[in-house]
Length: 247
Ligand SMILES: C[S@@+](CC[C@H](N)C(=O)[O-])C[C@H]1O[C@@H](n2cnc3c(N)ncnc32)[C@H](O)[C@@H]1O
Image 1 (cartoon, rainbow, N blue to C red):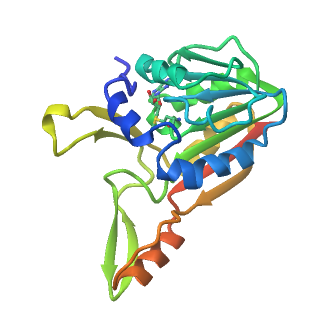
Image 2 (tube, helix red, strand yellow):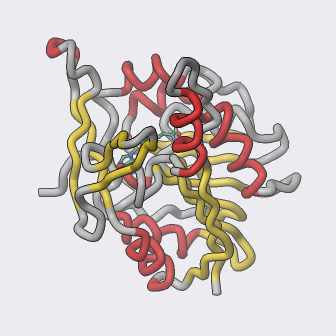
């Protein structure tokens, strides 16, 4: 049976950490850089797959036609309640199944493809709905350096290293929302694939990768380990952004 990858059960927790304007990384890294890569022009139509509570919709220029899709009806309800723009629409769908009867000039998938069990099917859908000159922008937790539960920091001789124990093999990783509060603890799933997998599913669905960017955390440490930690943070990216177009 297909695993339910909806964030329905963790929606209240996610609502708390994301709020109206997004969490720290949305605000400082993801939204400004995604908007730059999307390069939205007046009158264009943007589709946001795995839109959650619509954090991207609230950051785009007002004159963009926007459609947000998510498998979690609670996420969609929150998105609708926070959005007054009449050019914005939200629908509950499973992006790995439903073939959208829509066209888009730009598609964004922000921190969501990594939560969908069948990413190939999602990219196939993107190929069907994206206009010929359109762009697909995918933001992932960095697939080489930020593999949940399979990557860590190691400190040796005043240097901070990133270590991983699994890279090439696909993984399904359960993530607990509140590991220290078992009563309110709910599971969501993260799916790990190596970088070449993403290149392959884009290629197999008729896309060409125009650009890959790797984004580091802008946080700064304090205290005696600050220099070492800031260096590691600046060297090991948190997110990977891919811009693809049709070939
Ligand atoms: C980490 S959240 C990201 C939400 C939003 N893009 C953001 O940046 O805040 C991942 C989202 O993917 C959605 N999702 C998971 N599987 C999905 C599927 N098969 N189809 C559509 N959405 C899905 C979840 O419900 C969740 O809202």
